[in-house]
Length: 206
Image 1 (cartoon, rainbow, N blue to C red):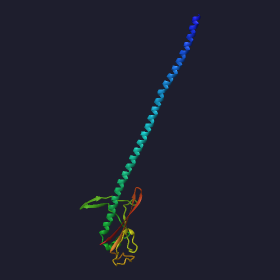
Image 2 (image 1 turned 135 degrees about the vertical axis):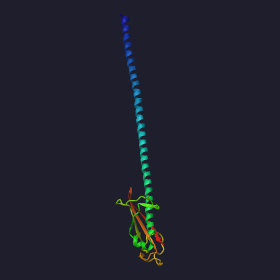
Image 3 (image 1 turned 90 degrees about the horizontal axis):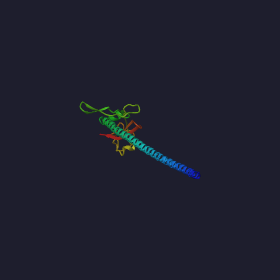
C-alpha cells in the first residue's frame, strides 16, 4: 500500500510535470504558429508599397507622355500657323507691288486685303492654302495703313530718306506727292491661346 501511494505520488508529480511540459510546448507552438503569419503580413505590406510606387511611377510616366504629346501638337500647330501667317503677309505685299505706286494711297489706305483660299501654281492648276481666322470666324484680312507724315514716322521703319524728294523732311502729308511710301500691315487672328496681332513695316518705292 505504501509503495502504491508512493508510486501514485510520483505518478501525480509526473502528470503535473507532463502537463506543464505540454502547456510549455503548446505556448511554444503557439508562438511558432504566429511567426509565419507575421512574416506573411510583412510581405503583403511590402508588396502593397511596391505596387503603390509602381503605380505612381506609371502615372507620372503617362502624364509626362500626355504633356509631351500636347506640346508636340501645339508646336506643329504653331509651325503651321507661322507658315500661313507668312503666306498671308506675302500675298498682301504682292497685291500692293502689282499696283502702280502713285495709286496705292488712294486704292489701299486703311483698307483690308483678304488672302486667297488658293494660289495658282501652274496654268490651270492651283493649290489650297490655309487661312487664319478673325474674331468672327471669317478669314483674317491684312489691314493696310500708309504713314505719310515724314515728320512723325514710327521708329519701326528705321532711318528713311525724304519721302517726297524735296530734301527737307518737313512735309506733314505726302499722300499726293510721295516717292517712297511707308507701309504698315496689321493682321489679327485667332490662336488656341486667344487673339494675336502681328505687325509688318516696310517701305514701298519704284
